[in-house]
Every structure is written in C-alpha cells, then in structure tokens.
Image: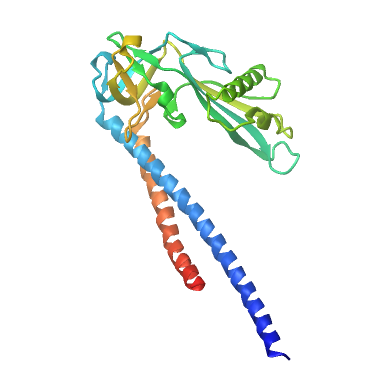
Length: 289
C-alpha cells in the first residue's frame, strides 16, 4: 500500500478526533460558563438583599416634614395632581406596574402541559407626592426598577383575547412604541396574539392608589423642579443605595436569611464552576499550541 495514502488516512482520523475533542470541550466550557453566570446572579441578588436589610436597620423612619438630605425612610399617603387609570383594574392611580404572561404549550395539544412565560413588564406614571400632615415630599417613581416596586396588587386574572382592556392596552403600547416613547422590541402585540395554540393570558397589576399609605426608601435630594411643583425635596435613586416603594416595610429577618442563603449558593456555584473551568481552558490551549 502506498505510504502517502496511509498518511492521508491517519491525518483524516486525527482531524476527526481533534474536531470531536474541540466540540466536547466547547460544550463543557459553555455549560460551566452558564452555571458560573447563575452563581454570579445569586451572588448579586444576595448582596442586594443584604444591602436592603442594612439600609432598613440603619435608617430610622422619619416624618415627611423631618426628612433631610441623604438616605431616608418615609411613610405617607400618596397624592398626585395627575392621576392615571390603571389598564386592567381601571382604578385611578399615581403609578402602576403591569405584567403580561402567556401560557406556552410544551410541544403537545394538552392544555395542562405548559408553563407561564412572561412577555412584558411595564412601569407607567409620573412622580407623585407622599404626605403625612407635616409636609409633602416628591417621589421619583419613574426611576424605580420593577423588582423594587412592591405595592398591593390591584388585578390578577387569567383572560383570553376577548378581554376588552387587554386589546386596549396592547394598542396603547404599540402607539407609544411607534412614537419612540418606549425602548421595547417591535411587534409586541403581534407576538402575543400569535400564540394561538393556547388563548390563555395572565395579567397582573400593582398600583399606587391616592390616599393609601406607602413606605418609600431612597436618597433625598433638593428638588430641581421646586419652582414648578412647590415641593422642596425629592426621593430618588442613587448608586449603591436602595430605592423602593412598598405598601409595608419589608421583613428584615427574612431579608437577612435570603441574603445569606443566596450568597452561599452563589459562591458555591461561582467558585466551583471557576475551578472546573480553569483546567479545561488550559487543556484546550495546550492542545491548540
């Protein structure tokens, strides 16, 4: 047999083995990086819960009239001169959060074989005031994140496409999107209604209602719109400081327990995956070189 032919065949076999090796190592590295990311998210969530528990412990509650510049924890009733109507409950409110989910079937026609998938969460409204009889303070609600908005739920129900307020809400969002007032993916309404395999939709709504008491945590600053609003101070978000709106004060003990558990789980995932990742990367680099 020709020696050159044997060499070509052996080279082809070695090439297939190398290709298989790179595929296996690549898949393993991708999997480890995914778990590493999960661990990092747990760590960040744990630090966030710990920071909030420390803020609640170290920041005493004050009356609105006693609020001063810096970190504050204030109770008061909500007020707004420009009330808006919450889309699902149709209640007049100062600010609201909505979540739209749809029932995604898992490859079968069985209605029970599926899961709820979140499609969109929106925070809508402007600044509102907290008042307690001593004074008023402005709350920069548009600057809050969805996870830090924990007020009483005003609507939660499974509906279908015939629910009138759902269609109105989708049309409103599409118009705002076209006008460029929201940085959201295009075709939202079409994607929602395209899931014809199951007509089930789950709508949730949380709203700040006028006259109801709320707790606001954040950083108090001088209101830059004092001349317009007539309110001296504004509670807003600042880096490395919590900014929350709650119907009641969060449970400090539960927050501390959550922070410890999530940080330990996150550290185990992150460090364990990092230890596994290093020899894989070194082995891959050694094989390439």
